[in-house]
Image (cartoon, rainbow, N blue to C red; front, side):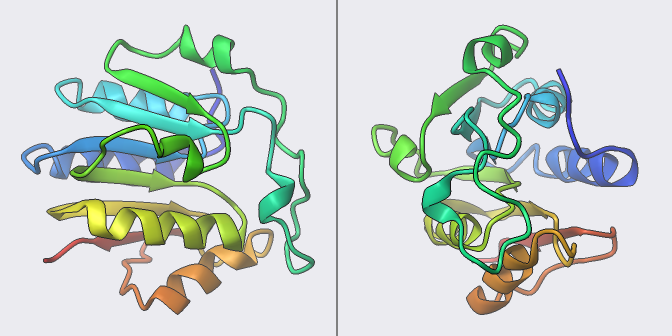
Length: 178
């Protein structure tokens, strides 16, 4: 089980998970890859249910545009069943293109979210889907903010007008205040 985030970024994500312990709602990860960070989140707060969303086929062609550095199909070295069997019981996985893959779920209260979608369109759709579902006091952690290989992430966050904490390199944290 592998995660591409480590060190200070992973610790910052887990600190956010811990700070959100008393916030009502579930946890979500959008962009699971091999499940390492989702597993760490679910273990850091084992009292909360988590949902992980990914194509498990690599970055989706539907979300790609010419401004992206990564290409469709990258990060395809993952498999739904292999990831699922390594995750704790408080985690459910959904395979497919997000947010369509969430359409059969009633996820109206989210305490903490980790978004690692790499592409502009995917990140934009994640923001649009998450914002009305987030609990007050919760947080959205975005991976790859201001990283040259994922220029669309910053663009989507900026266009949404989110005021984010960027103290950790290539990571942005949005604290929800309603």
